[in-house]
Length: 390
Ligand SMILES: Cc1cc2nc3c(=O)[nH]c(=O)nc-3n(C[C@H](O)[C@H](O)[C@H](O)COP(=O)(O)OP(=O)(O)OC[C@H]3O[C@@H](n4cnc5c(N)ncnc54)[C@H](O)[C@@H]3O)c2cc1C
Image 1 (cartoon, protein in one colour):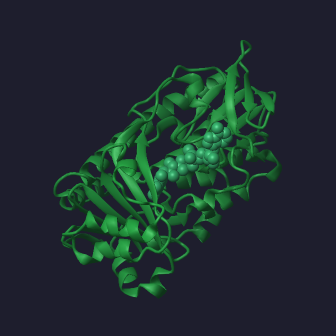
Image 2 (cartoon, protein in one colour; image 1 turned 180 degrees about the vertical axis):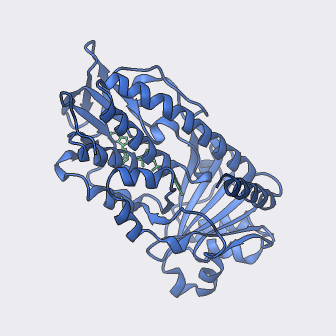
């Protein structure tokens, strides 16, 4: 492992999501002392989303750089990588079991992943309750930070790991996120195996995608036994407000959602019927594919802040962690922050644009006619290409 050989720099990371935490863990391991500023009052990653598949070439690579790969492998759910893809009539196009799939993409719940990263970080390097309100580029290359709670700081390197609606991004670029045309409603089926054994068996150990009519129902087994359900619809941007669905009244809202799937097979509809708690509607946004910003000597972005994309190819968290490890390596390797940023950004622009393209293709396919059949063909081609490369 390399250690700092030059004057220590003051590094601020905005955001304690998977990207910011990974960056802090790797930098600390090499003797740097970054500070993470997080707007929430405490670690809220457990409440923010479900199971994530961590890819060998990105997420796992970053965990290795953080010295956490072995612990990850102990915690990860290798048995939960199965996939079932059906159409609206219940016709099965993909039905993978453990023995059949060749992925190295074990699952871990987001909260557990972030706890693992936190275990490698000195607690006093994270400041909770610090929402970045604005920042100012100073002539000497440093950046002045102003937080909602009245605190200020001045740093040599500011890293925006502050997600989709990044405040740091607005310092270096005018580009805004765009609505993808898809809105998701999140539901949860708690203790699925005990309470709904037939549905749990149907879902299997992993994910179920039911697709048709430009609508997708996704069932995703989580580590705590719940099936997280994402009802995804190709609708106008203001659908949440205009649909008239009372999302704060779960029973009624579920009934209204079911009406959208009236002529669908009963099994995918069960995912909506069996969900017991609140419904969370969300618009899905993205940054333009190939998004870049004007280089600054002391500011950069990682993760969703740098290349927000839809979740339909499962790349977001993996890229956030890969960015963190690439930026950390560049900081460790280079004499100056400016050189480090240049090296990191050139590299990151190339790989993230490629993944953003694949993700966009995946979204278009899932909301097109004959989506299940197309997805099956696409995945077979993809698997074929991986085999021939191996
Ligand atoms: C419904 C859904 C399902 C998804 N499923 C998957 C999946 O299966 N696989 C996958 O790889 N990805 C998935 N993603 C995407 C994944 O969650 C993100 O790509 C990932 O969390 C990005 O990590 P990040 O660290 O860049 O940002 P985030 O996780 O968004 O973290 C940003 C952090 O910055 C903090 N912050 C924001 N603004 C400020 C501020 N002004 N000051 C201080 N702190 C601030 C936030 O509170 C947060 O803690 C999904 C996303 C959604 C919405």
